[in-house]
Amino acid sequence: MKAQPKASHHINGRYVDDEQGTALPVTYPATGEVIASLHSATRNIIELAIEAARAAQPAWARLKPVERGRILRRAADILRARNEELARLETLDTGKPMQETLVADAPSAADCLEYLGGAVAAFNGEFVDLGGPFAYTRREALGVCVGIGAWNYPIQIAGWKSAPALAMGNAMVFKPSENTPLSALALAEIYTEAGLPDGLFNVVQGYGDVGAALVEHEVTAKVSVTGSVPTGRRVLALAGSKMKHATMELGGKSPLIVFDDADIENAIGGAMLGNFYSAGQVCSNGTRVFVQKGIHDRFVERLVERVKKIRLGDPLAPDTQMGPLVNKAQHDKVVSYIGIGLEEGATLACGGGVPSLQGFEGGFFVEPTVFTGVTDSMRIAREEIFGPVMSVLSFDHEDEVIERANATEFGLAAGVFTRDLPRAHRVISELQAGTCWINAYNLTPVEIPFGGTKQSGIGRENSLAALEHYSQIKTVYVETGDVASPIEQRPRCNPDRRSGR
Ligand code: NDP
Image: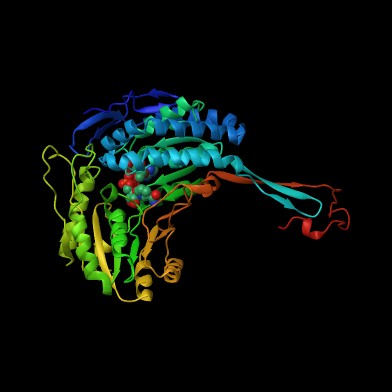
């Protein structure tokens, strides 16, 4: 199996390489075989990419928003037309089953390009009536933005970052996770085919040091990272030291609360979606499933029945429902957390093993795992595992569960299942999380903002909020009368109109 791109990086509309860069092998997580060999960006490659972006950006920012949007919408059409091929590439890169990559990866990037490509023309500044004089605000581009991606949704992340950046007139240099470098290159090709001028979307490969060099670069105006909390803290500190804009989409340990009166099958569906999709490698997963005592045993029984039916196997086969983890390190981390759960005294309700799958002996598979009897202090209930491991905790009362759900440093997402809608809204209003669901879980259509609170991040992706985060406001005050200088005479103008400082 091979998925070798023409070269490692895509800069200024074309593929380039520098073989001096550290080797970056790409493995297919289902078998462990090397499917491509790339190079991490050298200083020379980083400079080429930043310079291409810097040179191309001003002319792009001067275009009418509707013209920029038209190119994004054309790119969305190409993404959709090439969906099958992109899904296969994403499956090879991530190990996620085709069942997922056909519907959740390039299609989500396409949705974002289409939505923001259309919305940007209506995203304007404000007019402010000052009783004679007036003011207006302009939403202006920031300049060169750096996007840094995680491995779980490579093309989706590249789309979610580049679409608002480009729509607002910025240029982007994007560094994918070194685990999944391939589909961002395909996106760069697609942008070029859609008519995006050279230099506006550049992809450079590399490890964390390349990300840090891009963030630190004096030309970089903004950085947007999807990754873990420790990485986010490092990048934010670096960006902050140079007063750069930053969006951080980081990790979580989100609560999913199931009340006694919930539709049990729907709640189980939500919990499974929120723990086992993408083999559990989803930042917003509801990995702490709080189930009210009255429904707890029935919930666990049906949950286990349904989880046992999840089909693991060949990610390219159409009926496979769960694939492997992205690499050996992540596999070993998840397996070690299962051991920690057992040592801490949690009850293994199902899974917990490493399956032996014929033809995929070198793959990084872990069975979908459910722990019950989990308590708040256990590490499996406090730390982000980023794998298919669900912790079920029981609770008695609404106030109690709110307090326990909020007792975490994270604040990315939360969900509530109940038929009592006033209670659903009441509980959601008390939960410390940026993205919440009522009687659903992990749905993230591009029309709504996505992002976290507390240690889970700063800023939002998707929706019009994303356009705000890729632009800055310029305020313009316009005088329509005479200019009175208070230094020379008593002011004739209303003192309110003088500087407010
Ligand atoms: P990491 O934090 O390890 O890496 C994220 C990206 O940052 C990678 O491209 C990485 O490069 C890069 N990086 C690492 N160190 C630095 C640095 N010092 N400066 C700049 N860039 C750096 O995350 P993972 O790739 O392991 O992804 C999993 C994490 O991402 C989980 O915590 C998950 O919750 C979170 N996530 C959050 C989402 C959200 O929207 N909130 C969505 C998806 C995932 P390299 O890969 O080479 O180390």
